Image (cartoon, rainbow, N blue to C red; front, side):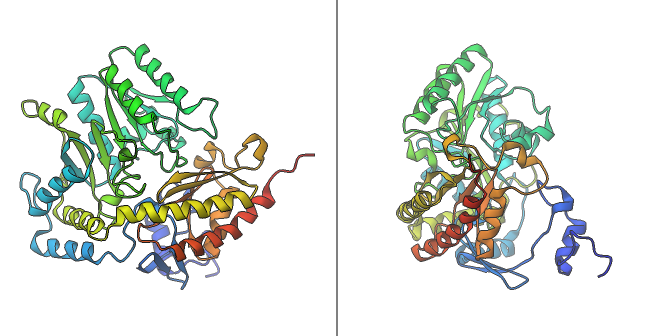
Length: 447
């Protein structure tokens, strides 16, 4: 033990093996300190050192069903016994019924799905489908966005993690966001900017790709009229609207999908995370009747080995049945209102809370070191830099109180499982109340 490096000190055997042989994601490897999880139940999980955490962010905003969705676990085991894998040219009851179910719960005339294994693959499929359908190649996305880590999806991502992958795919261009707290543009003014962009790009834009409610880049909820107007703008320029619902789908906002909040049916929608409640790697790209019909006589030139994997599709079908039978979508709206009220209280008692925003069980707390200037503790470049920020330290302090909360750049991301109770929300808010005192103390004092 005497020759242990500082980054390995305190790690148990499994954690040390993991650090040595497995890459930590989005990290400088000398800063990675994996923690072994040994169990989970309900909305809590336990680490090997005996600590228990209330999961206030649904892990990476994906464990919508918590950690005790027995129906999903049973469906996985049953399908694995019946037949774990068949080539995509075959089908299974789980795949066919999941496709039917998605046509039912998604908005409007969305009807036909390509199944993949992740959100990033779902976005890759959406980009290719838009290009094949329109015959054009440019994709307009936004700066405060995350669409995935593979080559195409990181190219259309706005957050600074894209920089290491550039130059990315051709034709990826960025637009401003509906960011009322931290932008010089009003959210609706940013729309007119996009309209002008499409005009200046000529007839070269295949699609406009957005998260209807921005997820890890700040939990940005646009005005009610934003998404309907964006669809009009896209269609005025013969471009498609792609809504990335990987994070915001399956009850997260108190509706099945964030698009439902605005009564908008996109031409293409991507999904993952809550699609299986994170019980199996599963993504989906669903398109309208009109887009689907195009490929009746044109080749659908996309696919991969695990497209429509039977075990993953069984998990997805069981997850949706769980949302329905336990009425979790409506419940998320009701409990989400309570969560919103409790977080607003934090905003009134902590000067370091610059903004509290969100909808349903999808909330963000943005911090500030100088409230009068909306000056952030965490800058965008911190996402690809070494070291910790005050926002990281606030999240860590909540962890010391037994509450896991994710953070991104300058925002604490509150996205608990849809099964969370009001008592558990109170417990988590008490921990955040304590943690935010650290940010209050770190604020800059003007002479």
